[in-house]
Length: 149
Length: 346
Image (cartoon, rainbow over all chains, first blue to last red):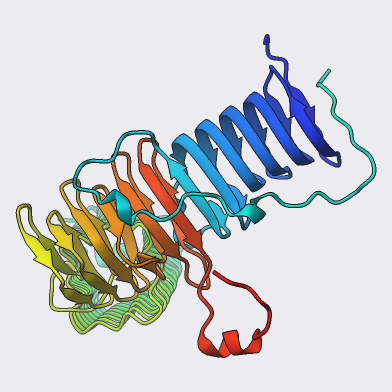
C-alpha cells in the first residue's frame, strides 16, 4: 500500500458504499458500508453503517455493524450497534477522568476461542443483531472522498 | 561548642551581618526574637529555640537534627530541604511554612499547627503528628510511612501520591482530603472522618488496610446463595459460584480470579468488577449498576450489563472473550409511566 490511505476529511460527509484496498481514515462522517484492510476513526469522525475491516481504531462515533479482526476502541458507541472482533481493547481510564468509551445499547462479540465445557452455552444471550441495527441514512448534499496528497 | 555564642549571633544580627553557613551546633536561644533572620545552611544540630519567635526565618538547607523547637513560632518560615530529623517541634506554629523536601523523620510534631504548610516530598516517616493541624497542608509525595497522625486534622490536605504505609490515622479528620495514588497499605483509618475523601477504596473500619476483605478460595463451591458486601469491601473469588446473587455496595471491588467461575449468577450494585476468570449470567442482565467492569486477557463475560445512570466504565484487554450486551439504565416504574404508550418493547 506504500503508506497510501483513503481519507474522509473533517467537514466531509460520505454516503454510500466504499471499498478500498488501502486503509481508510475517517475524520468526517460516513454513512453506509465500508470494506477495507484497516479503518481509523478519529475523534471528530463518525461511521454509521456496516463495516468489514481487518483492523479498526476508533476514537470517534460508531453506529451499526462492525466486523474486524482487531479493534481498539474509545469514543462513543451508539445504540443498536454490534461489534464483532477477534480481539478488542478498551483501556481503563482513571475514575475521575473522561470515559474511555461511552457505550449505548449495543452488543459485543469478541474472541473466537470455543467456550470451555463448563460454560452453559444455552444460557448465552441472543447474539443476533436487532433488525433496526442499521441506521437510516438521511438524504443530504455533498459527498467527497479524497486520498491525501 | 558552637562557632558563635548566642550573644555573638544576636550582635551580628543587630548589626546586619549574615550568620549563614555558620557552625551553630547546640546554640541555646530559647524565647529569642529572630523573625526574618537567615540561618541558611547553618549547622544548628541540637540547638534550642524553645518558644522562640522565628516567623519568616530562613532555615533553608540548615541542619536542625535533634533541635528543640517546641512551642516556637515558625509561621511562614523557610525550612525547605532542612534536616529536622528527630527534632522536637511539639506545639510549634508552622502555619504557611515551607517544609518542601525537609527531613522530619522521627520528628515530634504533636499538636503542631501546620495549617497550609508546604510539605511536598517531605520525609515524615515515623514522625509524631498526633493531634497536629494539617488543614489544607500540601503533602503530595510526602513519605508518612509509620507516622502517627491519630486525631490529626487533615481536612482539605493534598496527599496525592503520598506514602501512608502503616500510618496511623485513627480518629483523624480527612474531610475533602486528596489521596489519589497514595500508598495506603496497612494504613489505620479506624473511626477517621473520611467524608468526601478522594481516595478510591479508602473506607473507615477496623481493618488496618482500611478495606474489608473477603476471599473465596479454589475448590470451594457456593450454590443458590445470596451474598451482600458492604461499601468499600474487597472481594476476591477463586471458587465456583452457581446460581448466586451478589449485591455490591458503593465502591466495593469484586475480583473474579483466574480460577473463579460465576455460573448463572447475577451481580448488582455500584461496585467495581474485574473478571480474570469467567462470568455467565442466568437472568438477564447479569450485571446491574456496576460503576466499572474490566475483563482482562483470558477473562470471559457472557451476559448483559445494565449500566447505571452515569454509565459504566468499561475496560477490555486483548484476549478476553465477550458475548455481551450493554444496556442503558432500566427505567423505573415512575419513568415508565411517564412514557406509557411510546410502544417500545424489549
